[in-house]
Image (cartoon, rainbow, N blue to C red; front, top):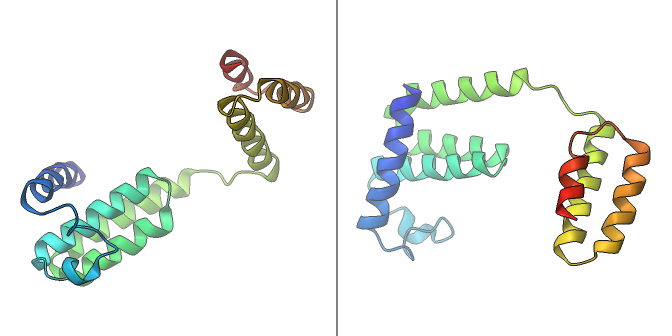
Length: 146
């Protein structure tokens, strides 16, 4: 069912792009969105859900799946499978410790410094980070960015 859903999403994305004006198909433009047929609108919400999942926005993923279900009750089994799969995937992930969250923040800040051209500051922060967490596997990648 998940393979079929993936194929459906890809085909629906192409269908919507070819059939409807991009200015009309915009979630912020609710006046036009609600004019879509219920099966297309339900699929559109599924597209938004998949985009949210790719952007790691889990709350929006669930929100759009609920909107899809509300729009077209025929999708009840599909939405149920998607939510069960989502819960199963997230159940297996360990919650990050506070140290891991801070480490990710520091590494992202180093990347931002590099991208903004502050190489000297990025090296300083990286050297301080190496003193705190010398066994991090991302250190070599960060060094290569410098």
